[in-house]
Each structure stands twice: as structure tokens, then as C-alpha cells.
Amino acid sequence: MVGAVAALGWRLRSARGAERRQVEWFAYVLALLVACVVVAAASLLLPRGVGETIGAVAWNSALALLIFGLPLCIAIASSATAPTTSIW
Image (cartoon, rainbow, N blue to C red; front, side, top):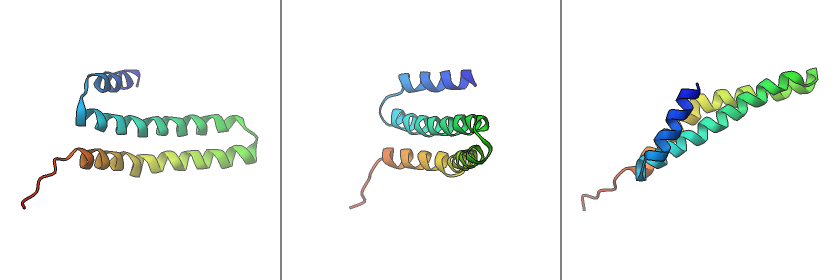
């Protein structure tokens, strides 16, 4: 896990232009995903009713980021960096 984060950081440092924007979008979504997992894990330390609610919201948010967030960030980054050519 540490190696993957280090590789992403290295890629971000060495990337330029369109590639850098793509890696930035990916890193933003991964940071949100990690934050959701940390909040979900920390919710286990809270009292039963509050902890279950916060944990459920955090796990559902993490799942939504996995299902929708990562593909969406790839699509946004790819479309934002796609060359615009006109046939007219």
C-alpha cells in the first residue's frame, strides 16, 4: 500500500500537462476514499447508535467513490485533456 502511494506521488511529481491533471484527479478521489475508510474505522470507537450511523454513511460513501468516483475522475480527466479537433 505504501509503495502504491509512493508511486502515485512520484508519478505526480514527474508528470506534466495533461498527464499531471489526470493523476491529480485520481489522487483527489483516492484521498477522499481513504478519508471515508478512516472515518468508518474510527466510528467503531463511538457509542453504538452514533457509531453505526456514521460508519454506515462512511462505508456507503467509500463504496460510491469506488463504483462511481474513480471511473468518473478518469472520464473527466480524459475528456478535459482530449484534443479538440474540428472538421469545419
